[in-house]
Image (cartoon, one colour):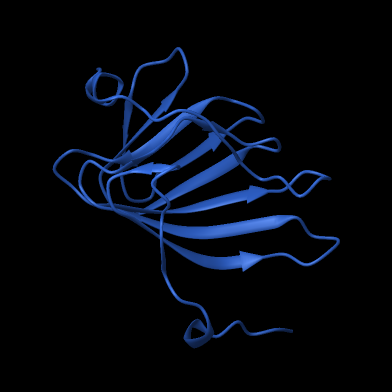
Length: 133
């Protein structure tokens, strides 16, 4: 058994290359070999969102608080709420973030591939894409 104390882990600001708006990332778990598990708590201010991205082994999002938005390429933007779980297939191009008037916090659960890659960041989501219904 291993206890990971929150005193030894600090919140970090999401990089501007990956996010629009203020986003905070808290590492919950990063597995040691043979595990490739990655779990993060991600906190979005109103209107904040990820850039378009993919995950080579897929991703699961579980909404903890607030109201969020998620979009898979070619599909409409969808609202997500506390208790909702979003399962994203491997290499599926998508983005997610907070609704315009609400904060949103979710757990992001994903695995790294054999090369250690768990996310591939792409271009930013435009305001037009963010507000599309």
